[in-house]
Image (cartoon, rainbow, N blue to C red; front, side, top):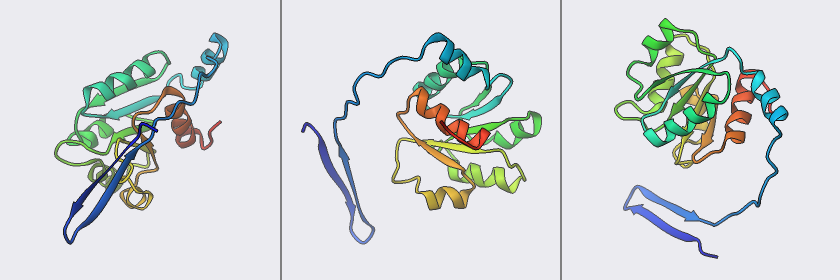
Length: 166
Protein backbone atom coordinates (compact mmCIF):
# COMPACT_ATOMS: atom_id res chain seq x y z
CA UNK A 1 0.00 0.00 0.00
CA UNK A 2 3.07 2.27 0.13
CA UNK A 3 2.19 3.60 3.58
CA UNK A 4 4.29 3.90 6.69
CA UNK A 5 3.78 3.23 10.38
CA UNK A 6 6.04 4.22 13.25
CA UNK A 7 5.93 4.75 16.98
CA UNK A 8 7.39 7.14 19.52
CA UNK A 9 7.50 5.77 23.04
CA UNK A 10 8.69 7.01 26.43
CA UNK A 11 8.88 4.69 29.40
CA UNK A 12 6.24 5.68 31.94
CA UNK A 13 4.84 8.39 29.64
CA UNK A 14 3.11 6.42 26.91
CA UNK A 15 3.37 5.81 23.21
CA UNK A 16 2.23 7.68 20.14
CA UNK A 17 1.61 5.76 16.93
CA UNK A 18 1.86 7.46 13.54
CA UNK A 19 0.93 6.25 10.10
CA UNK A 20 0.62 7.48 6.54
CA UNK A 21 -1.65 6.05 3.89
CA UNK A 22 -1.52 7.22 0.28
CA UNK A 23 -4.86 8.60 -0.81
CA UNK A 24 -5.88 10.02 -4.15
CA UNK A 25 -9.47 11.26 -4.22
CA UNK A 26 -9.27 11.72 -7.96
CA UNK A 27 -9.81 14.84 -10.00
CA UNK A 28 -12.50 17.24 -8.93
CA UNK A 29 -14.18 19.48 -11.46
CA UNK A 30 -13.02 23.06 -10.95
CA UNK A 31 -15.54 25.70 -9.99
CA UNK A 32 -16.62 27.95 -12.81
CA UNK A 33 -15.47 31.57 -12.66
CA UNK A 34 -19.02 32.62 -11.69
CA UNK A 35 -19.27 30.00 -8.92
CA UNK A 36 -15.90 31.06 -7.51
CA UNK A 37 -16.76 34.78 -7.72
CA UNK A 38 -20.13 34.19 -6.04
CA UNK A 39 -18.45 32.13 -3.33
CA UNK A 40 -15.88 34.85 -2.59
CA UNK A 41 -18.37 37.74 -2.69
CA UNK A 42 -19.73 36.95 0.77
CA UNK A 43 -16.26 37.52 2.27
CA UNK A 44 -15.96 41.11 1.03
CA UNK A 45 -15.08 43.36 3.95
CA UNK A 46 -14.14 40.54 6.33
CA UNK A 47 -10.93 40.96 8.31
CA UNK A 48 -8.95 37.93 9.48
CA UNK A 49 -5.94 37.74 11.77
CA UNK A 50 -3.45 35.06 10.74
CA UNK A 51 -1.11 33.90 13.52
CA UNK A 52 1.40 31.64 11.75
CA UNK A 53 5.17 31.32 12.13
CA UNK A 54 5.80 28.90 9.27
CA UNK A 55 6.51 30.88 6.10
CA UNK A 56 5.24 28.19 3.69
CA UNK A 57 1.95 27.82 5.59
CA UNK A 58 1.50 31.59 5.68
CA UNK A 59 2.22 31.91 1.95
CA UNK A 60 -0.45 29.31 1.17
CA UNK A 61 -3.05 31.15 3.27
CA UNK A 62 -1.98 34.52 1.85
CA UNK A 63 -2.32 33.24 -1.71
CA UNK A 64 -5.82 31.91 -0.96
CA UNK A 65 -6.97 35.13 0.71
CA UNK A 66 -5.49 37.43 -1.94
CA UNK A 67 -7.83 36.04 -4.60
CA UNK A 68 -10.80 36.97 -2.43
CA UNK A 69 -11.89 40.29 -0.97
CA UNK A 70 -10.74 39.25 2.50
CA UNK A 71 -8.58 41.74 4.36
CA UNK A 72 -6.01 40.08 6.60
CA UNK A 73 -3.20 40.86 9.01
CA UNK A 74 -0.34 38.54 9.90
CA UNK A 75 1.85 37.97 12.93
CA UNK A 76 4.46 35.25 13.38
CA UNK A 77 3.90 34.64 17.09
CA UNK A 78 1.32 35.02 19.82
CA UNK A 79 3.13 37.71 21.78
CA UNK A 80 1.37 40.67 20.16
CA UNK A 81 -2.06 39.18 19.41
CA UNK A 82 -3.88 41.00 22.22
CA UNK A 83 -2.32 44.29 21.12
CA UNK A 84 -3.52 43.70 17.54
CA UNK A 85 -7.02 42.80 18.77
CA UNK A 86 -7.20 46.06 20.73
CA UNK A 87 -6.15 48.11 17.69
CA UNK A 88 -8.25 46.45 15.01
CA UNK A 89 -11.53 44.55 14.67
CA UNK A 90 -11.24 41.04 13.26
CA UNK A 91 -13.99 38.65 12.20
CA UNK A 92 -11.92 35.47 12.66
CA UNK A 93 -8.53 34.40 13.99
CA UNK A 94 -6.64 31.70 12.11
CA UNK A 95 -4.25 30.47 14.82
CA UNK A 96 -1.38 28.03 14.45
CA UNK A 97 -1.06 25.66 17.41
CA UNK A 98 2.72 25.21 17.30
CA UNK A 99 4.15 28.70 17.68
CA UNK A 100 7.51 29.79 19.07
CA UNK A 101 7.24 30.83 22.71
CA UNK A 102 3.55 30.66 23.61
CA UNK A 103 1.71 27.88 21.83
CA UNK A 104 -1.68 28.40 20.21
CA UNK A 105 -3.53 27.03 23.23
CA UNK A 106 -1.97 29.68 25.51
CA UNK A 107 -2.69 32.41 22.95
CA UNK A 108 -6.34 31.31 22.67
CA UNK A 109 -6.70 31.35 26.46
CA UNK A 110 -5.27 34.90 26.56
CA UNK A 111 -7.71 35.99 23.86
CA UNK A 112 -10.65 34.59 25.81
CA UNK A 113 -9.35 36.00 29.12
CA UNK A 114 -9.15 39.39 27.39
CA UNK A 115 -12.90 39.18 26.75
CA UNK A 116 -12.67 38.70 22.98
CA UNK A 117 -15.42 36.51 21.51
CA UNK A 118 -13.96 36.32 17.99
CA UNK A 119 -14.14 32.83 16.45
CA UNK A 120 -10.78 31.07 16.61
CA UNK A 121 -9.96 28.50 13.94
CA UNK A 122 -6.79 26.66 14.95
CA UNK A 123 -4.52 25.04 12.42
CA UNK A 124 -2.07 22.25 13.08
CA UNK A 125 -0.18 19.48 11.35
CA UNK A 126 -0.51 17.34 14.48
CA UNK A 127 -4.09 16.18 15.02
CA UNK A 128 -3.00 14.22 18.09
CA UNK A 129 -2.05 17.42 19.94
CA UNK A 130 -5.22 19.33 19.02
CA UNK A 131 -7.84 17.13 20.68
CA UNK A 132 -11.38 18.53 20.73
CA UNK A 133 -11.31 18.67 24.54
CA UNK A 134 -8.03 20.56 24.69
CA UNK A 135 -9.18 22.99 22.01
CA UNK A 136 -12.51 23.67 23.72
CA UNK A 137 -10.89 24.23 27.10
CA UNK A 138 -8.51 26.77 25.50
CA UNK A 139 -11.39 28.61 23.82
CA UNK A 140 -10.70 27.40 20.29
CA UNK A 141 -13.86 27.00 18.20
CA UNK A 142 -12.60 24.56 15.56
CA UNK A 143 -9.45 23.02 14.09
CA UNK A 144 -8.25 22.49 10.55
CA UNK A 145 -5.50 19.95 9.91
CA UNK A 146 -2.54 20.86 7.69
CA UNK A 147 -2.10 20.43 4.87
CA UNK A 148 -5.46 21.79 3.86
CA UNK A 149 -6.88 23.06 0.62
CA UNK A 150 -8.88 26.16 -0.22
CA UNK A 151 -12.26 24.41 -0.07
CA UNK A 152 -11.72 22.88 3.37
CA UNK A 153 -10.39 26.19 4.74
CA UNK A 154 -13.42 28.12 3.50
CA UNK A 155 -15.84 25.45 4.79
CA UNK A 156 -14.33 25.71 8.28
CA UNK A 157 -14.26 29.52 8.14
CA UNK A 158 -17.84 29.67 6.91
CA UNK A 159 -19.00 27.45 9.76
CA UNK A 160 -17.40 29.78 12.31
CA UNK A 161 -18.31 33.12 10.74
CA UNK A 162 -21.73 32.37 9.29
CA UNK A 163 -22.70 29.46 11.56
CA UNK A 164 -23.05 26.96 8.75
CA UNK A 165 -21.07 25.25 6.04
CA UNK A 166 -21.95 24.02 2.61
